[in-house]
Amino acid sequence: MVERPTIRMGPDDAPDVQALVAAEVARQVDALRQEIAALAERTPEDRVSLVVFSGDLDKLIAAFIIGTGAAAAGLETSIFFTFWGLSALKREKPPPLHKELKQRLFALLTPGSSKELGTSQFNFFGIGARMLRSMMREQGIASLEELMAIARELGVKLTACTMSMDAMGVTKEELIDGIEYGGVAAFMAAASRSRVSLFI
Image (tube, rainbow, N blue to C red; front, top):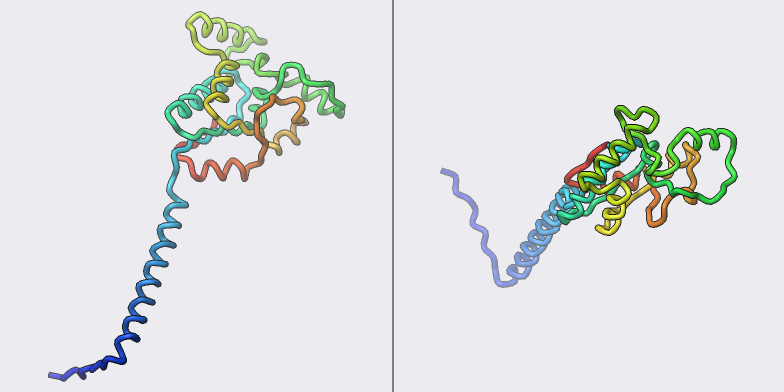
């Protein structure tokens, strides 16, 4: 059997050992802090993020029902409007604006406000949308415009996609007040920390 050498420490060695132990403890604590910070960045928060791509009345109603429900449940909620979804944010009577021919034609071919949105099925030149609104009113269900007002009261963040605005010739003057503007980075910043992300 091989004998192990005995390490003898004198009183002068004690401070060195204490310093080594303290340095090792500090190193391990720092490593733990970094691991906790990394986990915190990947841990979803109490948030809900919705992308509204559709410009259909029924789908927008569904988006705002989900959004207001989430906000009422205490979740931080954001709705990102892109492409056709921007029509829901258009004001009814925008100020006169100078636009190029293509932009003017595009504006004529797309809904001028939330009240001009059609349904995804059985629209029939707007008849379907009017019937849906009428049936919702008879059943005491909030309209899209009422849901939008409720969402804003509950603190739901409404963001218009600036890239889509540029592509479709939509200006800030055409959109309702009280909304935010941002690109995909703004949406991803919220979605990456959300428990629920939906595309509508």
